[in-house]
Image (cartoon, rainbow, N blue to C red; front, side, top):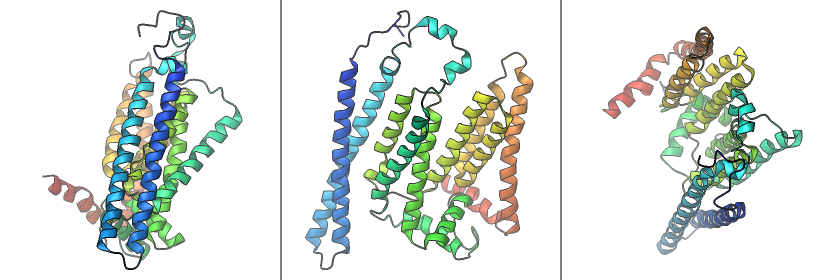
Length: 362
């Protein structure tokens, strides 16, 4: 902020230093990730081999744990530090003319919030395809390594029971939202009743998330920083040092980012249809993972109420947006509650989704 009065801020740290720092730390992280990947492949090979001795098994476990420690230190600590370092010099690094008061004074409020897209068609279409492909390729390598009997088993058992015709919440336990289990059960019916199917489904969702992150971030950040953010999303995945889980969080995050995307589209176009679609996406987030959906619904509702509340003539418009948003949510909630009631699952869903967590929390 001390440079805001000057026409062009002088970087405290040269750009070439930041670039070299980023490349060097990314290389160290990739070395740690590769080391961890090879160690986990080795331990899997030892476990499935015949005649494995206890000493060999212990050595394999130790090697895997050492690799996990390396990747935690290199990938997580270094890259998080680097992200903070780049954010400090965000305007200088990506937008050297950010301190130009004349250009800032000419920008409207919406243009300051959402930079205009000045990229080519190839960049707009090629970047999300590249991010989706590289995410699926990298994450897919780790999706088939390792099994967590508790967490993998929890999700797989529920989806398998539903795929085989059992009644959700009544004849099988479902810890999270019913939509997560339904989507996983459909995947098992189509591609086969194996845990690996759920792993690949989760990898596909992570690829969709990379595209959605790009679609959202490029509306509020320079294109270079939005692309860097997506690379950091890929580099900081937790399953480089733990097992990739087919968890409900991946489903919920897709719906959550969809709601944010529709919210930005509304800010860009002021079309009410995007408010309605935002309500649909927020409600879907709840039915994928209840706690996330509850918080998201509250936060977005407050935004709809107060975003235009203090503008001339904005009160009626804000209330209209609020009720349209709630209408989209009620459509999803009504459909899901009616489906649960028709299938005799409503009482059991309430017990497992709210009563059991309340008892456990107390």
